[in-house]
Image (cartoon, rainbow, N blue to C red; front, side, top):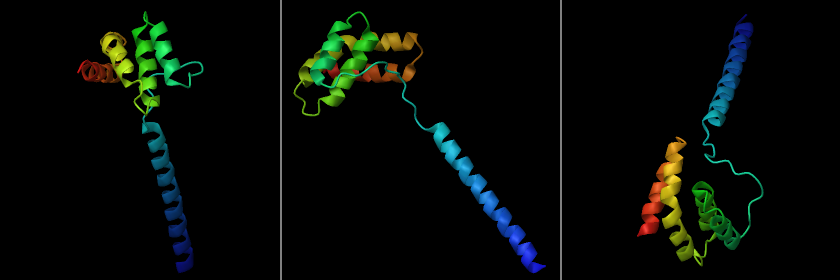
Length: 120
């Protein structure tokens, strides 16, 4: 009888642990940070291509801002930092305003910080 009680308790303990682990994994996946901007199409691979993309999209501050931020991330050597910062100083305030209109407040705050940093 003691063996039967022990196996029942141990079986429930194992089942409870498995369920709790599944819950924790599901909660982790559900609360993982998601990208806030969805990019479509193939991305250019070089800093020069990203800068050219941003220059072509003057009428779209959001697209120019995102292209310049990708260019900044790619430019680890800092060879194009001055060009990127000059363009960001012009585009970021307009992108921030557009992000606020779209109620995308995370990107709006980031664009404001980038605009202030680029203006220095």
